[in-house]
Length: 250
Image 1 (cartoon, rainbow, N blue to C red):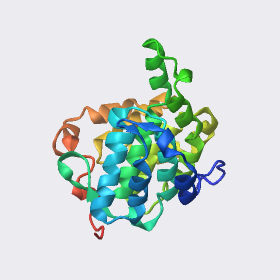
Image 2 (cartoon, helix red, strand yellow; image 1 turned 135 degrees about the horizontal axis):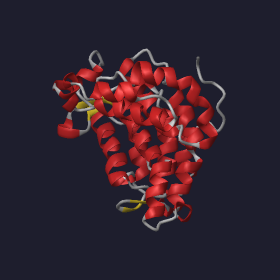
Image 3 (tube, helix red, strand yellow; image 1 turned 90 degrees about the vertical axis):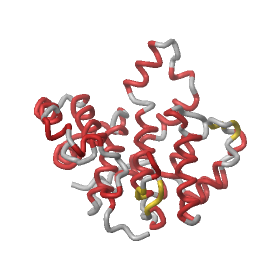
């Protein structure tokens, strides 16, 4: 079943760049007036500029999993360009500069952003005395989850298993949003079939945590993770291993 009934589609990426007052927004290094050029490089730059742009998202716009006022508009832009052909290229990314398909990196980044406004993150903030409703960045990211899901859901049925798994991993985190929970029933079989059996240990963990939060049985999946085969070789594999995108032209 293909998910089609979404509202709140991502904004036109060019308009979002032009109409956002980036200088009034903040990221980890101060005013976000350098973020538009980085976002533009994701589509229009050469591979080395695309790699730098992805690192800008990771290390500046979402530094150490933090949210800033620039995070939400940047996430909307990323969600809007996921299916554009320039994102289907391999760039140095992640640990040790291993090459990763940019589209996968962007999906993983969106999943990380979504995770920071989930129920578990909210509980942690409240426990620490930081009510999330008083954090504009938190509130903004929560508000755009339907739009982010629209972009991510366009790749849930990708014929490329790496991209499909990355999209599923991001979707699981986005479906924490109350207005999106009705999509869980559609995704549960896909999460079990594809994500929970992924060679990527991080994706498997996301699958188990998501299914457990949705009230689904996960005992068998947890038991599989405890088997010796899951603790050898691929268990410590880098999520952005070159093996994950064999055949990509770059």
